[in-house]
Image (cartoon, rainbow, N blue to C red):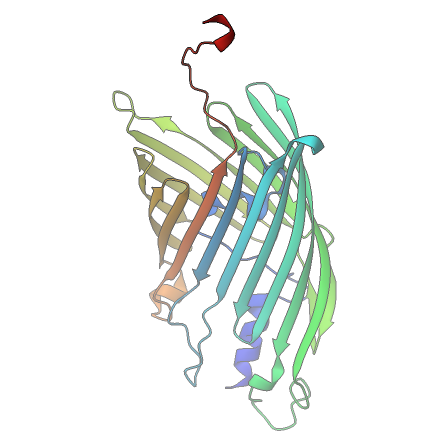
Amino acid sequence: MKLWLLNILFIFLAGAALGQQEPQFSHNMFNNMGINPGFAGLRNAICATGLYRQQWAGFVGENGDKLSPETYSLNVDAPISFIRGGLALGILQDNVGFHTAVGLNLAYSYHHNMGYGRLGIGGRIGLVDQRIDFSQFEPGQDGDPALVSQDEQTRIMLDFALGGFYKSDENAWLGLSVTQLRQARSEIGEAMYQNARHYYLAGGFEYIYPGNNDYVINPSALLKSDFNSYQIDFNAMVTYKNVVWGGVSYRVNDAVVFLLGVKLDQISIGYSYDFTTSLLGRSGRSWGSHEILLQYCFNLEVERLNQPYKNIRFL
């Protein structure tokens, strides 16, 4: 493995000038909890959402080493009535080459009835363990000071997030959030890390197809920026009888995404494939990206039965 791999890794992770980028997901319409702490508990259900993503499948180094980034995410949130809001716990692992980041975060959202829906305003605190295994690199020349006598280096970084999320009774929603608010920085080996603030604007709604309530159309969009670069996803999904869904997304200058999924009672299972349209895909270095969604939601609303009954005292 040549030194160019180390340079590519640092470009992915970004140094002090660019800031570390957060991982992306194609199932962004299911991942509001992952980017916005204000979303915690707004579904009035206990929900666990797991995502696995393999970015740029087939991307390898000179020696055949697998370099495709892989991300694992799990978020659990629930409404808590006595604190007038919701709580959430999140775990994230992001693997890029010989770098691994493992994060743990806790979020709280305060809920307020407003207009035709509810507003959640929340904050999140998180710790991220950043690790680079320098022993896996082969220097381009002997005695390279960046790699000589290096093994695995690790640093723990503390950061915060803030967000607001409005969910209407008509199943429309809008969220605005900022993550990595503290812009924590630390030195690992010869690399200086600094988290870049990320701003997210997300919104969408449900549209019941006229004349046939079995079909529900869900258009949505997600704008992400660190003010150095911008990324926007346009999504359109169709759900049939609240059981099966399919859709397509377009991530500007990056990928066309195809989504399929099924809901089995309280469990939702989804799969997406990203057809890479950037230079990485056009050059044949990537076969695209794969992503799997697994979500379980336990609804806390008890359905009331409108049936008359008799009291035994009045028989």
